[in-house]
Length: 566
Image 1 (cartoon, rainbow, N blue to C red):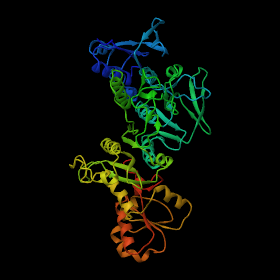
Image 2: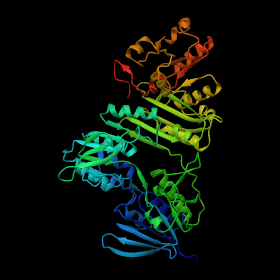
Image 3: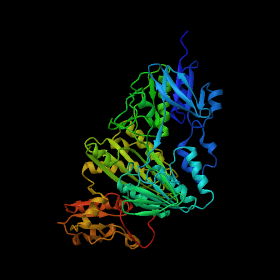
Image 4: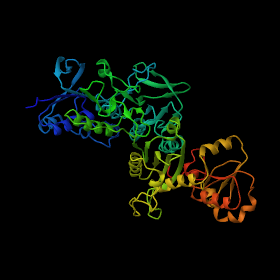
């Protein structure tokens, strides 16, 4: 009879419990123990902002599995409120501390799993320990927010960091009636996820919801009152009053236990693991936020903390600690978030990331609607594709807007996983019915724009390139081909702008200078592209259109009414 295997798992949030459950299904006889220093297991930490806002009414809803479930159903021993102190790899022992009793004991293991997660990044600045400055990674953090908000005495909140948690919490705090300012060191929100023009779309939506943005501002300290409660956030050139501060600067792998045990740490700062999620010790596995991942496009090691990835890791680890040989192929950085009514998603590489990795890229900006234009109440979305120019292979995509985007980003994630090209994306047989989609999905449109560019039919400039030409006073015609009523409603103000509606363009060719550069635009670029082709056919030799046109223009618009759907 085979020896009963001892499996010890350190960490009980996502990867750890998943590894334990999978290991139990693979090996009904193994002794499995989960060690967790908090008082809950299987906590859905991604739901914390929605618990703060009251959308999720009870913290019990965030706890997906109880210790009793693991004991009675899975036959897994759980040691909550127990901290792992040290790993003796030679002796195959883990030293643990029972936090209630301060009793120190050891656990023997044959296979050890590190699922130690991550810890919040706290800037090393003056005043960081003042009362009223919080992070948000655990249920107890969310409860601290709820306790502070319930008396309704706090009026001003500052969020340091415009990442996912920062923006989700901006909504949560605004819903509670607070005046919210988001301070971000980079020049845009979601700087590691979105390119500039896509981030600007989100920024406009935040501002329309009353959120104040201080971008390109690095926090250098905090100032407190006589009770050591935070009262001011200080950046390099501003001061912002606050009685509540959230530090949302991101997270870093919790590697202290692994590092002290002499396990290899990767250049990203995460625990180094191989394709089987083994560490540098063949009897120690690691997964979740504490490890490095391989990016499936670049094959480079990255940090990609996500509950979805942690669960995938857990399944692989649970298989392998019981004798399997399953591999984990890596991640695409697929991300989605709700920012008030604006949906935000990305997958793969952004344009800036692709260029940093040395790819020669083609991109497009394509506004569209979530479903058929003739079906009522469709909401807008904006798609950006990033493509390798030489091969047409998809490298990444971003989608933002008030309409449905989850299925679009999942389509792109699937396409990237299997190395699809824009030709293949353009011909995907996607479901179509008016309440759900257009006959030509916005992703089809985006793929076809890239194909037209590669074929030489579509010649474009980005909004940023055109804005630079305007700022530098370049002599070109910026041709608006919309209707006069659209022009009256809202328009780009610049000396180079001229209005000739598309339906009158063929009759007005003689008023346009053939020797000058002409850049056409409209609301979404469809008419602008048609105008470009009309001018090409009429012998104009230097004609382009603006990618995305007004719907993707990230700068000021002169308007007689609020900018639509922002």
